[in-house]
Amino acid sequence: MGQLPIYLLTVVYVSLAYYIWQYHQYKSLAKANGCKEAKKFPHKDPFLGIDHFLQAGNLFDENRYLPELVERYKENGRTFQTNLFGIPSINSTEPENLKAVFSSCFQDWGVQPIRLPAQGPFCGRGFITTDGTAWEHSRSLLKPSFRKENIADLSILEHYLQKVIERIPGDGSTVDLQPLFFSLVCLLAYPLYLDTATLFLFGESFDSLADSTSDEAEKFQEAFKFAMFGSGFRIALGPFKWLWRNSKWREACSITHRFADRYVQKAIDYRQDLQLGLIPQRGTDEASPKRQQKNLLYNMAEQTDDRTTLRNELLQALMAAQETTAVLISNTFFLLARHPDVWNRLRQDALALTEDQAKNMDALLHIKYLRNVLNESLRLYPIFPQMNRGALTPTILPTGGGPHGNSPIYCPKGTIFDTAYYVLHRDPTIWGPDAL
Image (spheres, rainbow, N blue to C red):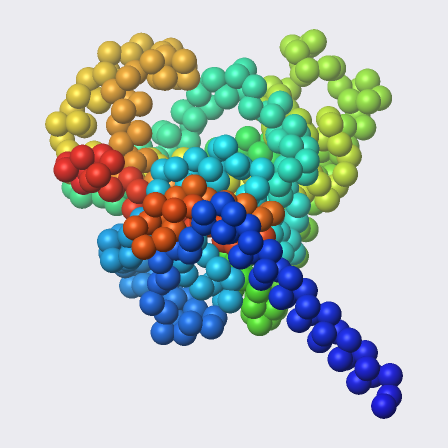
């Protein structure tokens, strides 16, 4: 017998022995902690759960995914297990399980195993794709840019807000406000928050609200949009992301890198000038550009000269900026248009402010009714309707297992935890009969 067959038999034997050991350990720990399995979702494909993946794709195309998610939880309960390409996934809206995953046992769960392999070619390691010490390092780079003095002055929004108002008909006719705040289909459709975000992140606004945008900026925006789409699709494919071999996505990643690298170089130049004393230290001279004080990239460059790190954090910050505030404002106006009594009261509170108060973050934060309106908008239409984490180590969820759904659930390393805030926030057993 040759060496190759012996080697292959050894590999098979060791793999089988390891699987049996893992299974025995799983059973022993589960039994010792009184754990029971969660109810299993009735897959048509019990091996890989491809039926679940295909159904989700169809529902997204038909804009029915979230309503169907509500029905799925109604049929299967607050906690149930699905198969995600062969990986066990615990789906739960149980408050106790959410507390464990995101608070009391947060160190057992993370995003890196889910996001980094899929998003790495696009935006690398950063605050969106890492856990633990790597995430803490990213946070330390970002934190100085979010000092109160950098975000409390809202006057910078005035220029862009006026451009939005100019595009709203003054004759009382119906208008679609969403393209003015945020465009999910085309980033060139006059998004307010793209301009303010790039000003804060890059130090220069793309000024996409102007009548024309540079060809280079437009090319970057289109590439960035497709790179984000591809990253999300790769996450959805899980362990089979390698099947999606898309040269357009790779090129989109390269375009975003080249564009961002130009601004990274400017930040490196700024760092060198600062170290040589050619630029006054922040706050020591009135000639120090205010723009640099509010520029996230320059603030990070004061702490590191690693170009890849700067680019990764910059791209991830731009990702976060595009899918937060603009979505919240769009959803809020959608609701206000259907509740004129709320709109009128909110308008009266706004009219009571002086011009200076209207541009001051502290003053706005003290408008209780405004806070309540935004919170209710977030409840009904959370910015992230679903959130998941991967088990970084064997761990236990406090409830949801067994025939009555009140036993702990043992989660081996690699288990996916998926929660649906859209469902949780509409649960009448939590929010009352008028939850909707």
